[in-house]
Image (cartoon, rainbow, N blue to C red):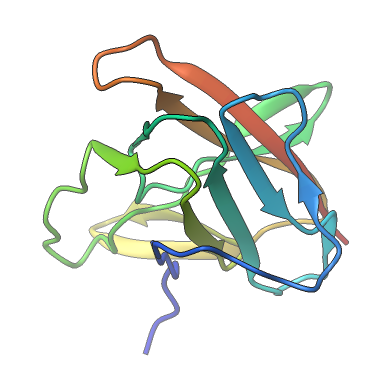
Length: 152
């Protein structure tokens, strides 16, 4: 059986006893994750709404990871759905109630389609970041926030 991206969206209040690396400077969202991960370790992100109102995460089932190389950030290819499968379109937006959280998980696989087949490779060591785009109202301005982490 092929290994595919494990993507789980869970509504919950999240508690964890590991060292956390959280977003600073964004008044609406806090992204919580460890500072560094070993190769092949699942990377867990908790995206917490810390505003006084509901927020709207854009493309909540798509993991948006960027890799820092040669002084620039490059988006990594991470498929929502294996090439061989017929998957429903992912939701365009997810409402997160105030004080609530969602979780995402990335298995460190870079994935792409070639000849209608899913191809994958292990992410390399280095500096990465999760990119989250959201709105504070359904039709509001898009806000981008990021959280950096390393793969050692």
